[in-house]
Length: 270
Image (cartoon, rainbow, N blue to C red; front, side, top):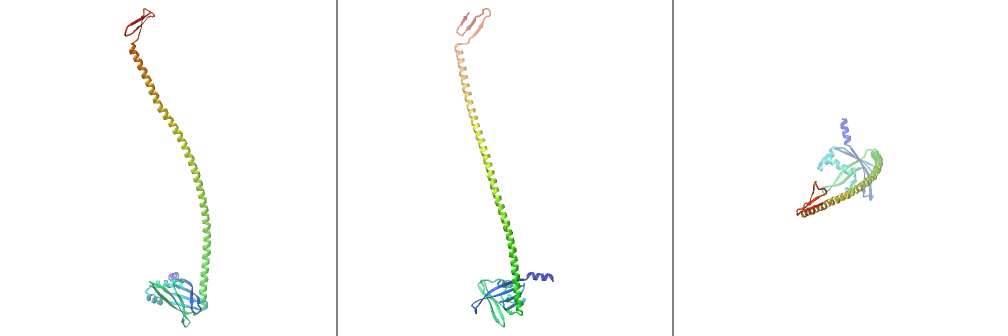
């Protein structure tokens, strides 16, 4: 039983609408307050203009009959009534007319598939006007208190988020500055290292070019010396062939005598 009552309380919804209705007699608008209690298969309305009060208690049978007339499920019918009596819809025409015997008829219009329809519910004069008015005022006061508390809570949350956001922004800016400084320092070091490497590469290139020049000159000198040696050897051979072979003979008996002979003849010298 407790679960059933809990489920019913969860399914119950409450709304309170300030409804502005044209008054042909006054040429202005009258304001009424419509408090709705919405249940899965029925609903209850309490209405006041500040002086008088009316009630509309839509039973399950009445709601089911109305839903069948409009070819709608009960839940859809109640949801649509709540949509128009929980919040004033700009495109709808509302009226709260006299129905005789102190009763009033609450009506509103809406369009369905291009057809303009009108729904009406009869409201009876309240048995206890004061109680109904106080009930509506209490609901409005409670709703106002809840909204005020919600606004305060949201404001505090907003301030906290604002402070955290400012801290995050400041920290982000700090990280951005540190990152820029680090990148600048790293880039400067990289440029210095790169320039040093370039200087060393230029020195090595100069040394390599000098070594290549010395290596290219060495074979040329060797070639010229080989040519001079070969030319000298050729002249000696030619002269030897031209003048003949010179033989030196020392006789053991005659000291100081030297025989010099050629292929053409002999000559003795004492």
